[in-house]
Image 1 (cartoon, protein in one colour):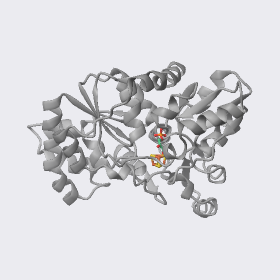
Image 2 (cartoon, protein in one colour):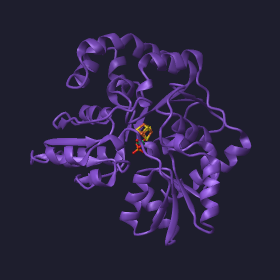
Image 3 (tube, helix red, strand yellow):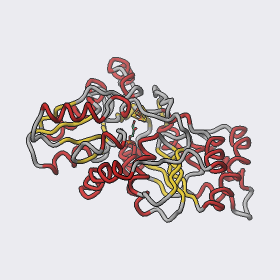
Length: 334
Ligand code: 13P
Ligand code: SF4
C-alpha cells in the first residue's frame, strides 16, 4: 500500500524541473521519452482533480504512469479501506468494475467513476446471483463467502466478502467446519489448505493467473538466487513452486522488507514495475501475464474520465443495501 507518493508532489514543485524529477524516479522502469509524452496528460489530470475535488485510487496492476497520478495505490482490500475514509467528493477508480462498485457501496453519497467502462474481470463474470442461490440451496446452513472480485448482485447473496489479503482470516473468523467460497476455485483451494476448513468451491478462474505453468516456474528455480512470489489466484501446482503466496499488497510488503536480489512475481506484469519503482535494488525476472481489463486504463482514459465525469457507478439502492452488508462484515474482521 502506498499513499500519494512524492512523485506528483515533486512534479508540481516549482523549484525542481518537474519532468526531470519524475523521469529520475521512474528511470529504471519507464523510458524517458514516454514520461515526456505523458507529462502534459499528468498536468491535465492534476488540474482536473483540483476542479472536481477528486482523488484517484489505483490498483497495484495499473501502469507506473497511472500509479503516478494516483492519490492511493494498493490491493483490493486497501482500496476499500481507503475509500471509507477518503476526503473527496469524487473518487476515480483506476482498476476494474468490481473495485469501483465496492467503492460506490462504501461511499454511496460520493461520485464514483470507473476509468474504463470495459474493465471487467473473468472471475466476476464467472458467476451470477442465481448461481449463488443454487449453490446455497444445495448446502443449507453453510455460510457463503464471496471474493470481492464479484458483482454487487452476487455480493448481495452472501454472508461475508473477502479479498486475497484476508480470505484465510475471514474464513477462520466464521468458526465453522465448512464454507461455500465463490467464485475462484484456486483461492478456495488456498484457503482450504491454510485454514483446514472444508471449502465448497465454484469453478471460476482468473484468466491471467491460470496461465502460469508449474514446469516453467521450476525451470526458473535453477537460478538459486530468485525469490518466487505467487498470487493465491494461481493454480495449486504453481503456488507450490513459490516461496511466498499473498495478495498484491502482501507481495509488495514482503519485497520491501526482505529485499531479495532477484524476484519473480507470478501475477500481472505491472506489479513488478510498481514494486521496482519503490525498490530499485531488486532485479525482476518477468514471466508475467497481462490483464487486459486492468490495461484498459491509460492516462488518456483518466483525462477523459475527469473531463466527462464518466463512467459513473450507480447501484440500485435496495441491492446496494444488501451488497454492502457482507463488505462491512469483512471490514470488521479486517
Ligand atoms: P489483490 O486484492 O491481491 O490486489 O488482487 C486483485 C486481483 O484482481 C488479482 O487478480
Ligand atoms: Fe480479474 Fe484476473 Fe484481471 Fe484480477 S487479474 S482483475 S482477477 S481478470
